[in-house]
Length: 377
Image 1 (cartoon, rainbow, N blue to C red):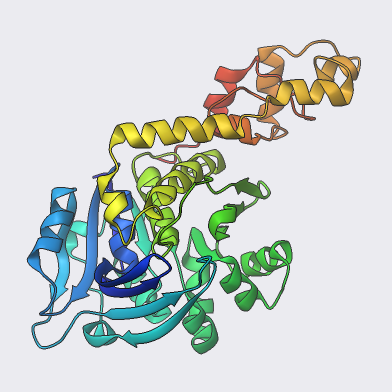
Image 2 (cartoon, rainbow, N blue to C red):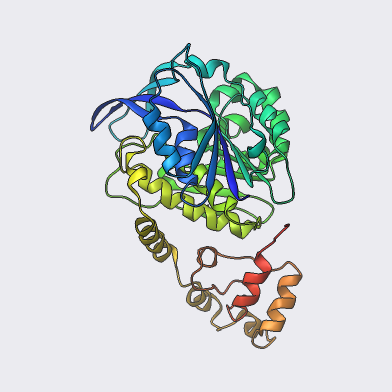
């Protein structure tokens, strides 16, 4: 069954923001990720809560199609709680208090019905627990494992983290964590070192500046959606990861272009998250809201690549420029079959094909769509 498994924290956050002080805000990395993934697929949630976690929060998740049977309630303790203070520009934050409570002894138990989930998203829990989850997940060619981590585990559990990374299809971390893990200060160098550690693909999140995918097809950049007002960036990165997990869980395509398209979808969702305190704004988003933002996002990155290339080469088609005549669809198909086609941003979001130095002029658009989709199922 098409579903996303999300494993991680549910929490209460106390937030000191430029806009005010907010207490007992529903939080937790897996909470944001589950809400984001639920826009497209059934979500199977594995986490732990204490006696103080109201049933109304679980009811809200269930109403969105989140299966909470995997959420364990411990009546002898309290729910994970975090207190943070943000700077005036929201660019940095200080942790004032962290109470792990019942989360300190969290041992994920994956119900049998959850084990064949299409995508598994492992939140930034102890890498030993991530490995335990992986040992319980039933993998097939369609399964995608996405994992996150945090500074604490990078410095405190490097050996266990190194055991986990080769088992991951997509590793998602922020730029600060990437530099810490790799020992490099430049993002490109950091990505190269991290990919040597084993993950098939790597996404480095850069907050309002977007995210970069690194894989065998080369780097790919997705910008952050520009907003007039940002209130709370707390769950933005987890919303991005959950949105991407939901997008990929909803389809069997595991190609690079599927991940690239999913990144735009995830970035659009994350842009909603920061417009409210906690997950409030994210919970208000309708399908029409999301479609409108995706349309706006698409227009924002559609650069009219064919016209740009013509300015560079002075010819309507690079094959013509090389004296080889205009590109035809059969020739395009053959060219693509040799692995020489690279797809630009405009194509990745489903807009006007770009004329690239590889000779793609869009006349083989339907062929390209077929070639870009790798369906292992």
